[in-house]
Length: 586
Image (cartoon, rainbow, N blue to C red; front, side):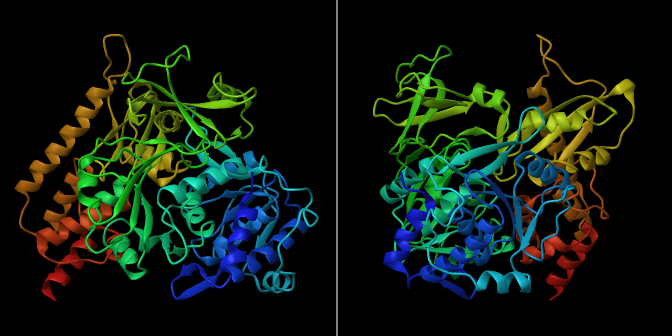
C-alpha cells in the first residue's frame, strides 16, 4: 500500500510543470509545491516529527497550507488541524488530548492553548530563511526518524462526542490508495481539471478535496473562507476559477444558483442526505454523484452515480477495498430491502479514537466476515441493500445529527448546557429546513432559578464551535415527557415550529419601515419571538447559510443586492437597515 508522499511524488514525476495549487493570482506548480514541502519536512524532522507523532496546524486557507500538510506527511507525521475560529477551551482540549510535538502556524494566527507547545511560525523571516536553505529533493526513509509505513497515522480529526467531550479519530495511510482509485473511477479528476478546496481543513472532507487534485495531477483551487460562503460568493468563485470538480454538501447546494457553474463538470453531494429536488436542480448539464462515509473511515465508503432525476437516491456501492454490511442486533446479515445497521469494513477503517480505548472497542469491532484480525466500524446509521447492490440510507439510530453538513452529537450540546450551575435538565432538537437547519435548546432550571437565554448561549460558546451553539435557548418550568418518562422531543420541535409561526405572523403585521420589516424578517428566519433593532443577527442564532438566505430575502423585499460582507459586518439590525436604505436610495 503506498503512502500519501509516495502517491504525490509519483504525480510530481510526470506533471512537475503543471499547476498544482491556485490561490488568487498565485499559481504553484507541482515541482515547486514538492520542493517547498520537502524543505519544510526536513525542518520538521529536526524538530521531532516522525511516525505516529501529531503536528497541530493552524493556518487560513492558502497555498502555504498545502505545503504544510504535505510536509507533515513527508516527515512521517500526522496533521491535527486547529480551526482558529473554534473556542480556545475546545482547542486546548484537542492539544492536551493529542499531545502534538509541534504547532505549525502562520504569524496572523494567535491561539491561547493554555499550555506551552513548541511552535514553528512558517512565515517568520528567520524561519523562512532557515527552511529555504534546506534541500528540496524528496525525503527517503533514511531522512526520517523511522521508515514511513501505511499503518502510521495520517491525520487526527476531532468530532462531536455524545458524552460532551470531542473525540479524535485517528486515520492512517492504509485507505489512501483506495480513495484515489475511487476518485479515478467516479469523478475522474486529472491534468487540466480544477478541483475546489471547499471543506475546512478541520474536517475529513478536506482530504478528499486536496487528494482528488494533488494525487491525480489536477489543480487545486484554494480560496479564502469568505469567498466560499454558500450562495453568490461560492457561485462567483466557481465561475471565476472555472472549477471543473467540486464536493459540496446539500446545504450549500440548496442556496447556490447552479446556472453557469460546473458546466460539463463533476459535482459530488456529501455530508448530509441528498434530496430529489437538489438532483433535479443540479444534475442537468453536469455529472452528479452522492457520497457517504463517516469520519471514522478514510473520508468515505460508498459512491452513487452519476445520479439523475429518474433515480432513487442511494448512497451507492462500496468502493474498492471497502465493504458495507447491513446487520441486525446479533450481527447477522439482514435480507435485501430490510433495514439494519450499517457496518463499514476494509482498508479505510480508522485506527480508532485517540486515547479512547473503551470507546474504540465499542465502535470498532471484530469483522466476522473478513480475514483474521480485521475490524469493522459500527456506524449507528440504518439502511438497506437493494437487490442490485445499491445501499439506501434510512436514518440515524442514535443522537447524532447533521446541521449544515456538520456532524453534531446532540448529547454533547446537552451536556454543555447541563454543565451550567442553574440548569437542571437540557434537551436539544433540530428545527428548520435544509439550509435553515439550526439547534433549538430547551432547559429546566434548578428550583426554578431564572437565567437569561443569552447567558446559556454564551456558556455553550465557551467550548462549542459555532455550528454547535444552539440558535435559541428557551427556559421551561419543566420539559415535556412521553408516556414512558422520556423527554418528548416531538413536542419540543412543535414548540420551535410554533415560535417560527408566531414570528411570521408578526412579520405580516409589521409596519412599512425598513427597520421593523427587517426585524420581523429575522425573527421569522431564526424562529426568535422577540427581535429588536439593537440585536445582532449572529448573536440571535444566525449563521453563514442563514445570512445568505437573509441577503436573498432583502433582495426580494427591497430589490437591492447587499454584499455578504455587509451582512456580516453590521453590528446591529438597525445598522443593517441603514445599509438597506442607502442601497435603495442609490
